[in-house]
Image (cartoon, rainbow, N blue to C red; front, side, top):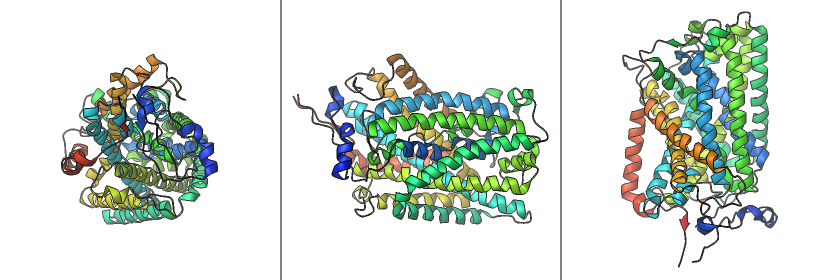
Length: 519
């Protein structure tokens, strides 16, 4: 039986290729040795520090939690926000550990869908891999679209605060959404080399904001919530029982911890990828959860009038909370400018990640026009066509906002659902393969003890099932046009489009990493 070597030949200088030899060599042992991963043309210049900054900046969990907190506060109050953060943290840590172990063996930009292709039975590999990959891609489109809208919301919140007579129309948000969409793409095409410094700066700003904002608010706030109000007062006006109310409110922390696979999709641009990406993935998740929880606790104590915060004319409860806590509109606006800057970097990082996944799927011939999407610009060293294609698709999503803001806001739940759904495939297959050393060689860099590994995989799969059910529920009863959850509709439409693509194209042409074994 012959096991062909793994192919990870990056388009880099001889010096860089020598530096990376330890990571691009054949993995010894069983099936892993026979996996033929695709060759990449991307420039390899990312390191552990940059990846941690990238992952932490992209997730900015404390920021995402504060900006989307209205969902959790309206569905259980601070109890849902705080305990929900801890509840959601467990499955995301388990998922992150599962991915870190796999990426330390199979360093490919395809991430979860390539892992699925490798672990699945031959007759099922392409189908399961396609579902995992397209689910991940659709979720990244949703994350990107949500980020663009958040930027528009931040901008108009500040305008409204200083001019209460101004009433922005949906087309105002749509315009800002599209402008940032285009500018983000231009940056990722022509200025992506600057990202090493940009992500470092954003990491610093995010860490500084997470530290300074709570200190200032806690110091300046004249009234603070009691321990009982923060930790035990559960408010439920949704019409659901308390259990469902709590579960549906978990969309907020789930969205905040989304994007944990971001660093994986940059693995083919990383120096020493097997070590660097698995480390960065774990550090970014740990930092994200810690900062998000501590920041949320501090903000929970600063809430003085929850009804006034939820009904703020700016549409940004966190903005009103800061104004109330500090007694200064200008001081709160400084913080808003800070999170605007961070959010702009998040949009850059999100577009970059999504484009790498589109490029990887194009390289595996997943769509019509894959040969077009798989091209990397020789001079710029980036997948320009994948970036442009994503810009157009996410731009089309923006038209949904003009039709229904409620439907568009469903993207938050969709992003969390489909991303975790895509992770569930390799986790479930590792259980089915019994964590065999044929697929997880003993000499891998990141190694979980078997009991811990099994526990992580089971929790990752179970969490996917939970959120695929409860994140489809309407936010309140009785169901109205404003309380309707359109996540099911969004997922159904996406499934039909991707299903048709599978029937007429991918079923015959899509092909992920192959295991080449001969007797």
